[in-house]
Image 1: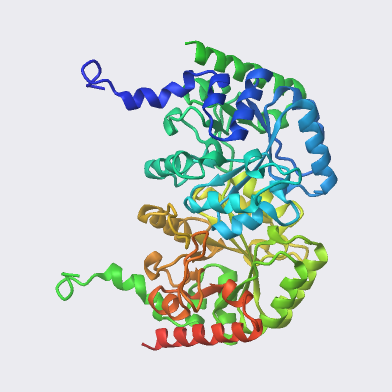
Image 2 (image 1 turned 90 degrees about the vertical axis):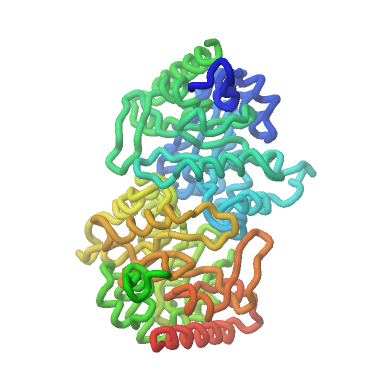
Length: 287
Length: 287
């Protein structure tokens, strides 16, 4: 702006500096243990691709997870659209995650009062907290959403470890749907919820569409709506290219769904997205 | 305000006029067929009580639905916290709804892009659209949330009827959690989504905390967080009395959860809430 030189815009610089820091360094800055794990995994496996496995049949999800597993850091599920959900499906999914080394994120978009999200996270058929390393949540209900989710984790797991330390949340600070109601004030408050207060150790990252959404380099930016062919679907979803979201939009992890799911060869498509996303990232940090 | 007399505040008057109109008259004004059904049922059964059956065991939900059924117009579920969910549970719940004459609302708070909510509403283990007369949805993703939900309903049911006409949505324009991120602009846009555009026939009402949230008398105001003893729970939920929400806050239907669930005699508690809420309503329209 007009003050460059005399009065450098320090806030502006900080806003973007995180996108220049390599993942392995950011792992050390993260306050969430799961974020540290995920940053390290991304750096060692050399992938910042998240596959959105939005399929309604368990076997199809397992098949695509097995084929794309080598190329992804994260597999994102909508468990409540799976028509033949079972405990053995979860066991198989966890086995694939361990074999191919990726984390599991249930994209539940929790958005209720604390007491309810606590039950939704820990109880019911899905028992999400028992298998999903990460979940997504809206900040709409306020800070109590973090307290509610944490309440579901209780204190210790069967082995005496700290359960909360093995789990994390991605908070939504922006949405990719056209005409959504999120404005600057909403984003600012979401940023505060993600970075201030006693529950920041539970926040692994932020789901958003732009680099200036948050500054803290210990958080991971997850950006959905990524497709090699830019487009808009008939229900308002907007797509952007891998290079654009990583270099211009600040995405650390890019979420690809239909771009891979609808490919003739899903493994090859995953590899292509992995390559283009990783190259964009290395160019971003090298610049 | 200061213009009373010379320049009457017409907008202000319209904002509150709907709370003076009896339910049976408002039934004729509703654009949603389910809203018409619900208004008529409230008027004939003389109840504006919604029971929030936030329990994790199917049998407990069926038991409380049977005991409280005679006093309620609506039973609200969080189906994803039920640990022993099954198709026979849904069949039993529907039978109780038919016997005692109340509608079913799944409080799913849909909050994703159109394509995803379409799958979450119609698919998965729960097949919510097949049994829930009503669902709740956040307006956060914008207008596409209505299009996405409608897309799940397809065209016709097995009997050749219009499925969409038998289903409806309550849109959240406010939340009862302290510190939530909803502001005046958000409320205003929510109001527009509920009352303008091609999908208004699918909107049965608005979940909110105050009478000035919307003006159109064909929509139903559903207000959660109601308890005879006002209080705040340890996860940020705020409670208000039956009389306060109906008379001061404009609630047409009041949602009571823990006030009934935690009572020694749940049927008696439901009757007490029904009596107090209905009396408050009759006094409100008589004034």
